[in-house]
Length: 446
Image 1: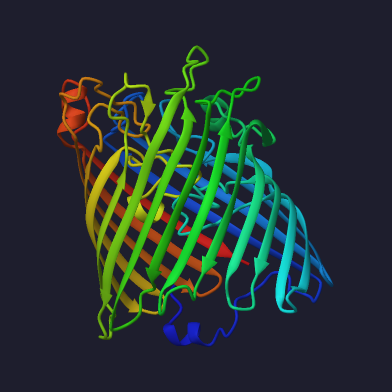
Image 2 (image 1 turned 90 degrees about the vertical axis):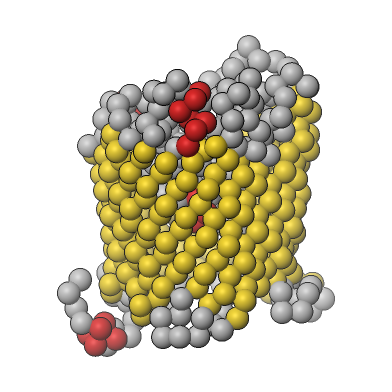
């Protein structure tokens, strides 16, 4: 970490333990992370503080032969230091398991003489749109599906993806076994199916990138799997202009959901509700043409909540399989905000000290979209609505340094959360009014 910039510049390519060949490539990564939380904001968790040490090792392999390809990924994530009342879940820690194993075939010039098609079958991960609805990683653990995807790359630059997948359930899923780092193989869900069509259209509008998508999620109880049974169609679009030095940029995304769902995963809840929900995201920024290339952004997110628990509708936006780190702060044992029942306005500033080191500072204000619905999955709800909507303010700092580009990256940050009047009212003053969170993370690739 003490190497000079001159020494780093001499590393023309990243170090690899095993040099890739024409047919085979095997990469490794090791992530170590410490989290410290003071002031627990959740309803169900015991104590006012927690800490977690997480270590994740990944082996990622690829074999190629002409149009055929075989990929696999093995991940081992283990924790230490967690308290008995910790909010750690299978999204945060899970001992040895197979995250990906799939085969793919590619046909070049399959249609119209210049369109390429790729078929992918097996256990795999997905990153779509801006990862707000479908992402490889929700927290530290990779997120997997098993099934079929078909990719079409058009000669004009358009890209299309069609898929039908079963959600992979991470095990173990009870807190005691997770804390003990028990090894239990992940399994494909019997009751959850996810399918859709996604298109990236870079030339639809001049100087803008566009995306459209239709996703269908169906979940129902099956044996030990308990879901808030639903069948919802999610359709939406995204238009954005990427950030560039000396220019304005923006990102606009919308998503609407229709179908049927139930209010909870309780097996005694058998009432199907009309599902009507929506999500909106907008941000606009400017990057200054100065040596530090500072960038400022205005950000707004809105996801509907259930307006009336007795009207026969469910208006709570389902976050699907989206990531929340980029928009709403750290996850792991933190993560107070989720893409459901909230309205949030914020500002963000970024300073790039050099190509390998930057500082990001974000201030966001949060409110409930519906004061009668719950605050995400934190356990707080006032069905009468008298506790108001104020979810508080979050101030986050994040420092990222590619110490050895391609090999060693460091990431650290401090977050302060003022939980607001809603938590104080609904808990009768028992909820912590201030949460402080710190993390330090190293990622070694070799």
